[in-house]
Each structure stands twice: as C-alpha cells, then as structure tokens.
Image 1 (tube, rainbow, N blue to C red):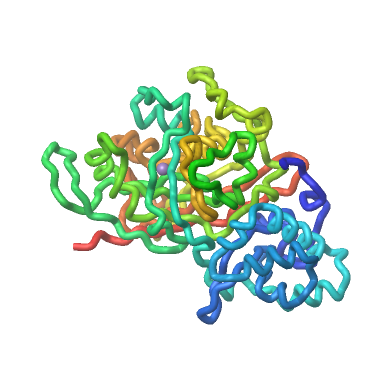
Image 2 (image 1 turned 90 degrees about the vertical axis):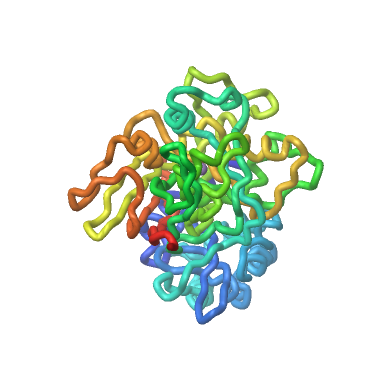
Length: 423
Ligand code: MN
C-alpha cells in the first residue's frame, strides 16, 4: 500500500509546463478537488497551475474503464461518489493521468487532455466534499503538555482523545471567518461578548473513503485502507469561550463557528513515498494492542512539514514551523479507535489530527501555545505584537511532503481572514 511506484518517479515530467518544479502540484501529486465556473461545479485534478476537468475527461475517452468510472464518479459537484467507491478507482485514475500528462504521452492523448484543462486562475475552488461528520482528535504530545501546563490527561497515551465537532461549518480556504460572540468569564463573571482570544490550530485532516457498516468495527490492520486522502485544517478556536464552556463535556461553541480546509485532497497514493514510522516520546506508554499493527506502526506517520503565517497590511510572518511526525497517533489509529465501539463512518467524513505541535518553540502550532495563553506577545511584520488574532488578520497554512530522492509535493494553501464580531 505504501510502496512508491512509477507515478512517484522523480524523473517524471509533464507536458503541462507549469507542473515541472511546481511547489505543490508537480505530476507526482495529482490531488483531487472541486471547482466552480460559470455557476457549474465539477471535480478536477490539479496539475501545475491547471486543473484537469474530470467531466471533460470522461467525454474525451482517453481512459480505461476503471479510470473512466473514477472520472465519472468525480465529475459532479462533490467528490463523495468517488470516495464511496473506495481507493481503487481513484488510484487507477491517478496512475492513468500520470501517464497521459507525462512528456512522452502520444500527441493524440495530449490533444484530448489539453481540451479538458482549465486554468486555476479562471475558476473558484470550492469545498470538495459534502462532509457528514467531523471529528477532531488530540494527537500531539507537546500541544497537550503545554495546554495542560504539564499535566497529561490520563487517557492520552492509551487512546487518541477526540470530540465530535461540527461538519456544517467546515468551509473552504478563502472564506472569511467572523469572530464569534459567546459567554466569557475571564474575571469569573460570565458575559456575552466578542471572543477576545481568537486562535488558529494548525492540523491535517483525512477524508474517509468507503466507510464501515453500523456495528462493525474496523480492524487497525484495515484502517489505513479506508482513508482517501489528506488536506490542511484550521480548527479556529475561541479560547475564552472554550475555557468557560468545556468542563465537563468538551468544546462546543468555541470550535463549531468555523473550520477551514484546503481545497485539494492529496491522496494516500500520492503520499506513498512520504510514510514514516510512528515515534513517541519515552514519557508516554506505547499504543494498546488493538491499536497496534506492524504496518501502521512502521508506515502510519507522515513526512509532512507544515507552517502557519499571519498576514496583515504589513506583510506575512511565519509564526509556526512544525512537522506531522510529532503526532503520536496515526490516522489509521484514529479511524480504528473511532469505529472500535461499532460507530459507523461515512464516505466524506473528516478526521482531523489535532494541533500539530512539536517540542521546540517554533513548533508551537497555535497562539495559545506561542504566547503562553496570551501572556507573552509574539512580534509580527510592521513591528506589531499579537497575543491572539486581530480583526483583519489573515491566517495562512502551507504544507509539503518531503523526502530525499523524491519530488516534493504540496497541499496548496489554507487561508482565512478574521472579520469583526457582529454587534
Ligand atoms: Mn483542534
């Protein structure tokens, strides 16, 4: 499953010139998304600064039957039908597009595919999936340690702690985010007011492919095969609302007002060269046996470097540099844990990793950590200070999968600008 193949060949180049050397979408990536043009939505595959319109490829007839099926399933306004078919059709489509987009593809194939290309600059990228359920996990040891002032929750080492978050308010990159009003009791007296401690959380998300039947847990050995691909997630967090409301049932309005995802789904197949063993600090116990599988322990982690920036009128400042390897739970373990009680997951459900913080100061992946809960400001462009987000601030996430001997592939961007609270 995690074996690199000819689609990851670093020598592979595309006749779509902008793909060669592209920071995010070289021919080795080929992520899936949905775009809107002239009021019509269609699934597509990113290649350089272009998109292969899957509804046009179907008509073109350059694909074999399984790949053509995948293109048809992915050609609608959401990718759920493609996810529901499991990973195999999408894998076949990615492989055939890799051949058809390569420099040595026959001119006849190029001609047909060229007619299906759409410049990314001419379209609007939209939310690629109708998300029925969204679960946010807690998989960073360092985030948990810092947020708990050194005290770890008793369950942390034994299971990937999670809460059911809100699917309806998951929005695509570029959507403005309104600062929420809520009940806040920083001085002990609750008052309904604009959130003063608005924060980001830098996370990765995973989309569920085919899902599991009600009452039927997914074995850890099968869990990774149920994932379709990954995106960036900004789990916007209203800290003052959160600190007052979260005992004892967990966060609610402090998280449900908005979550931003990047528009492209980087497939599990594209990330095959970028798998890594799960690593955990000595301070915590190993995962329990029902969440331990030899392949998942050896390949379940991701070699993905991530950064978060704050952008204002004075420019952009990268405030976080971190790495997915710091997570102590894999997405396979999250999925197996989620279904271990018989809970059914559906195609398009979103699992988020939780804030991806690491041990170093620069790895702190939310402002509550970066500013020690607002007590130590950070400095950003224009000689300004921030403890939490101001109105007008834009938060920008980027991530790249990197490994020596392979072409780096990227997730694109996950952006959102803060609007003032309603009065
Ligand atoms: Mn989170």
